[in-house]
Image (cartoon, one colour):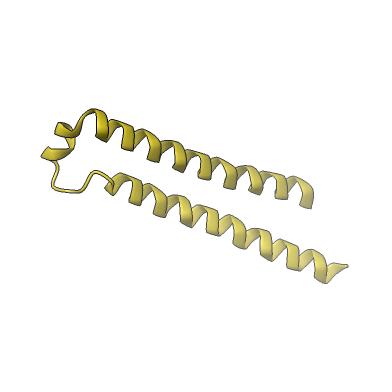
Length: 78
């Protein structure tokens, strides 16, 4: 049971890291290709990267906390 949950949490963490990196690279590329679109907005072009980074960070942190809690529970039972 622990191995399946650990694998799922590792995949979740890896997916959110990959999605964050891909979104960041795409946003930067889009900003360099079409800067006039971002000039209209009052927010800086990297705002979407920061917001997505915060959301991804919270999800990754929650997954890490679950991993630590389960690891402690497994050690306690052994």
